[in-house]
Length: 71
Image 1 (spheres, rainbow, N blue to C red):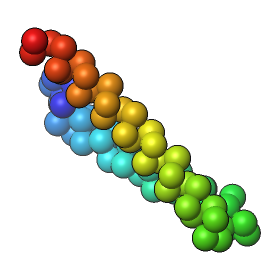
Image 2: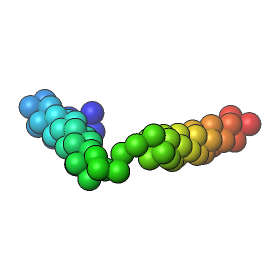
Image 3: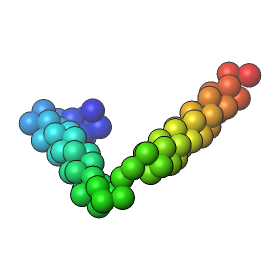
């Protein structure tokens, strides 16, 4: 949405949104290539733990910010 509002061009917004989505796929593939030799249950668990911890941390920050604004 910000690109569409900034440029007023739907094709540019679509292009940049598509490019952003492709970078996620490229990053996942690159991560798999790097970790495929050492990827086992332990690494899988560590990655899930790290990612879930980051997600919980981000949500706590957002929830506390919204809670303090509503008081």
